Length: 104
Image (tube, rainbow, N blue to C red; front, side):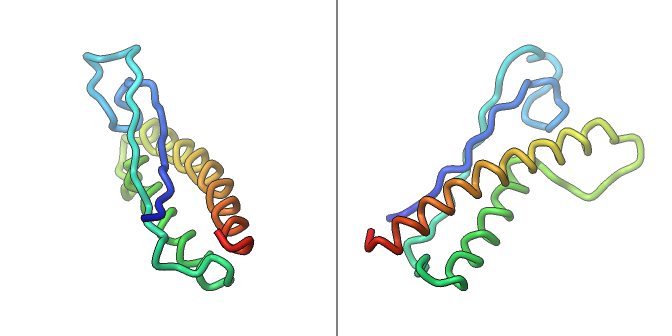
């Protein structure tokens, strides 16, 4: 089974919603696996489908939710987390697509 592992570490200050303030200073790691064995990554359509799956997983990992009044710090942390997750995932998707084009 082919999967990408989207893993992020965050300071557990409650900013991203990974932990409670009582654990301040700790590091929490969240991982979500994204399956792509059913996709043909040698095609643009297959890569786009994987990118959509990865984006949805990144939003879950980063606990990105609709904006709420008074939650600016959490929203900023969520956006930062999402940007890092997407950057990491782009590299993994590119490597998986390259591997697929080589027959892997």
